[in-house]
Amino acid sequence: MPVSKELEQTNRTTMSRHSERGSYDRDVAYAILDEGMIAHVGFDAGNGVTVIPMTYARVDDSIVLHGAVASRWLGSFEGGQPVSVCVTLLDGLVLAQSAFSHSMNYRSVVLFGEASVVTDKDDKQRAFKAFLDHLVPGRWDDSRQPDARETEATVVLSVPIGEASVKIRSGPPKDAAKDLELGYWTGVIPLELTAGEPIADPAMNGDPAVPDYASGYKRGRGHN
Amino acid sequence: MPVSKELEQTNRTTMSRHSERGSYDRDVAYAILDEGMIAHVGFDAGNGVTVIPMTYARVDDSIVLHGAVASRWLGSFEGGQPVSVCVTLLDGLVLAQSAFSHSMNYRSVVLFGEASVVTDKDDKQRAFKAFLDHLVPGRWDDSRQPDARETEATVVLSVPIGEASVKIRSGPPKDAAKDLELGYWTGVIPLELTAGEPIADPAMNGDPAVPDYASGYKRGRGHN
Picture (tube, chains in turn blue, orange):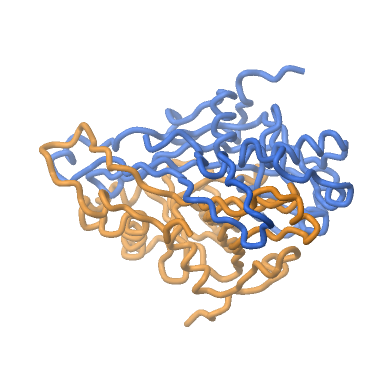
């Protein structure tokens, strides 16, 4: 079934504040999800709300997550587990005249859904490829693919991207007119996640060339 | 009451996987919290688990958060609300011989506690200063401080840092001995949040100098 271009607007995904920053455009959400590297996943497995950082990838219209079969909390996910998944990209610090008007430039997606365990072998393999190629495009082909034991030792979870919303703030500060006379410097300090020189593994055999995807690693769109 | 040097190890903060990456050292947790800029906060205000990104600061042995009084979900926090707060710093991508052994270098704190509303005016003012100086040290003195209306329009929440744990991964990949013969390049792509040239606010009056804390903005410890 083709998904709708718009995300699902519910009581939970409707913004009560700064609705001008909100969007329900699926393509906008996907661009954020594809640039992010860590998802913060919240769930209540009977012990109160827990938020943990996880790697993830987008596969079509779902988010896939993974963990070890031996992981304590994953045991609760067997029958489907309601989760909230949040991916946030920090783009800058917004310095205003008033302390109150200081802000951040950011892009975030908040998603609600049920995480279900992926059991189909092909789907699982596809998720494994997505985890790697999401972080380092091209790396899947430059690595040994999971064997049966590794595949069985890993739980892959899938959460459909449906009930979700996007929030974006960009641009300069918005001070009240009277505050502009105060005369402080105001503006944006742009922030970006950047890569340094790759550090070779001391355990590596031989001297293979550093692949382009490592030496030229780039994420995002550069300082705006 | 002086807090213990160790964080509180409970069922929720005990690691079931990779316990070698875990720590309950309060100072280690504080260093991560002081470097981070966004906390992912999870709670259930009666509508299922929700995770949202928030700015925060550490004030002594507590995390302070803030939101608008008009915010829908903050209404539920009046009587104290159980939350889970997670701060994650991404330090690198770890490329191994096997897809399975790929990993990330990161430092994270996961905290459980009850968020209570800060009502004392002095404590609130202290939190406002902490929000700004946490993000841009020195900025509080270069801005107009909150007036009565702004103070009243803002809800400040405080969560004690007690039941919490730290997880850190660093260093090269750990491949199985037999995989080292595969001959792929392996190592770490270091990642860091870096600042670009400050972008002046077009609405600014006059031409004040760019402050040093903006032109020389640095976060963290550099590419490792």
